[in-house]
Amino acid sequence: MKNSTYLFCITALLLLSSFRPSLDCEYANSNMGFAKSQINEALLTADINQTRFFTYKALDAMEKTKNQLNKCGCTYAKTTMDKSLNVLVLASKSTTLQGTKNYLNRSMELTTDTMVVLDAHDTHASRYSSDVLAMNTNNIETRATTVKIPVTLSLNEKIDISLDKYRISLDKVVKTVNCKDAKAFAKRIFEECQSQLLKADLSEGKKYYNLRTKEITMAALKKIGNCENYTP
Image (cartoon, rainbow, N blue to C red; front, side, top):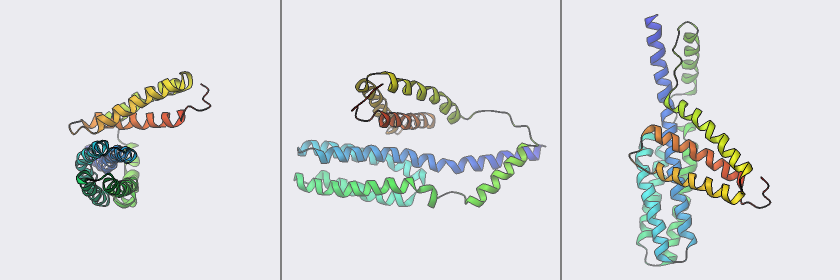
């Protein structure tokens, strides 16, 4: 019995660790999304000082994403982000608005490429092959029938459960509150989550909480839309 329990724990640990890079990729992708939004803001302004302001914010977000990308292990994404970062540095040093925007357009392309690669990361950089994962899953299912495992929830599972209540509450806001007020409310939460995810000293639990909250809130914002023909 002890040997079976030991083998189960080892296999479960391997399986759980195999999912870790995916989460790190999601955190990195979230930060890249913020950087992309700042590049877009820089492209929309006609004032070079404002353009530089947003460019620096994009640069800062990418610098803070380096550590997440290293944990993610996606070399393709790291390569394209490094290129985008270098182009942004050139944009910040350009002395003309047109020159700055030329660099920003190139950085926007590279940033988008980085996000696309991160989205597809599991298909080309999985820590274990699908055969190994299937084998390990089968082993766990077999052992679970013979070994009594205490039913305990991980921190992430507890967060997911708590966020189900937030999802229901937010959905009620979307359905019952004035469109503009609901949109402003959701947008504040989304921006706060995005700001929190850029912090380097955020704990794993808080990172996961903010990432999932951001995703739920983004879904609500899409549902709200631009408030045209809105009927609660």
